[in-house]
Image (cartoon, rainbow, N blue to C red):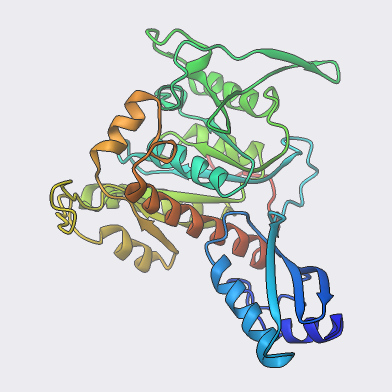
Length: 366
């Protein structure tokens, strides 16, 4: 066996999402051959890749069938999270992907989705930050159990920067960390937009594979400020199955589908999809309707990223400051892990197939 034999065999293994072979994509590294033993490393486009086993089996089969049926094949994995930023990187220069989690209305569990998405991506090995952009109704400081904590300051290149709170391996920043919880934020739009810009430019986010932004509900000032301030890689839309939520989710999809906003939609996730009692684990009760989110994704031809059930432990985790992905409920964690894996795949495909990520120049909206 030679290195050339191995590369020729692996040129028959396609990356399932990107539609090209591993060799063409330059994903095969460090080939080592010792008699019948051969090992190599496959460089994934995201540490949270859910297709790792499929790729490994395809590589082993390719070597055994096309090179030597007695070969002892070891496939190692590493990752280099893909990015398609082509902006000047004067802001968030160490962040590869910026993901906005949006919903057309409140109460659909967007903050729960955001926090557990961030944690699931981090558990896959990625470096992740979470920015709570819901200035009027912040909740991430509660969900992460850091109520009352205050972030520190540090000086970087002569500029004072806020150090985000780190918890469960996530860098997190929320207005809830800076103000008294009992006080309402009574600000006009320009002040809110200014605060959002500070969260981006005056926080030391450092090197991140993903920055997840928990957006406020609706389609307003903060959404426009975000896309005009940072190069948003893509948007994840959250809905619940019932008609009222779906009607509002359509507005969120429509906002980012406008010609002025060239921000791709990574996909849609349906929260509160069904209820399964603990004592009846095989039963599913579709309290808010069935497959509303899936049907909506099909209607708008956007990827459907998954269904998250109604589970008491999700609510308890958010209230107690230990999100479900940081807890012990393995069955429910799987739903979030599957969703995060699909989201990571969608981000990698977006970076490979669509136009570069840029800050939006919006001139025609009021």
